[in-house]
Image 1 (cartoon, rainbow, N blue to C red):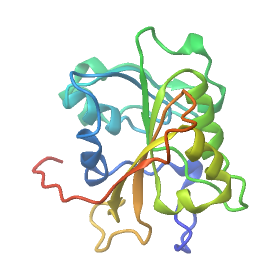
Image 2 (image 1 turned 120 degrees about the vertical axis):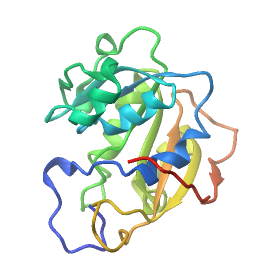
Image 3 (image 1 turned 30 degrees about the vertical axis):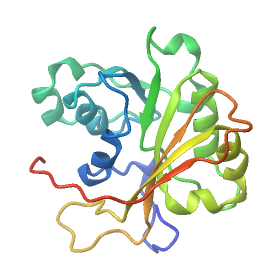
Length: 207
């Protein structure tokens, strides 16, 4: 998934979100619980952790659903619903349940080649659906030319989380630093660049 790795990418970038990557996001979500969709749901663990923290998942989508992780539906039976098979770039307003305000996701990272696909088109589609978007992406995303217009016009916050371990049981963290990027659907002209939040430490005893 990262440019510093020689390992082949997993098909459709289905890298499950680590808990260590999720935790730094929580402090930046409005309270009480928000209504969100997960457009690149994978096995649903990110949606489950958000629901466990008091937020409400209104729908889950994935280009190639593999089913919810069994542990998630046991702990949070309200998430025991099908993950809808659809490319996030093709979502329509009629796919988004009423009252939903956010899209929170660990999307596929940009493919080599410099265009930002499929990541930028996914984010653009979600903001066109009037959703505030939180996306887990490599820190280098902000330094690429294809990200500049999106960050300038709609980037609101960048939360650094550093390097995380994507595969449980492995000895080392990944070689790429990561951030949570917040994009808003309205035009931010004149508001300045995104707010940058440095990395903080998080301790947990779950999963």
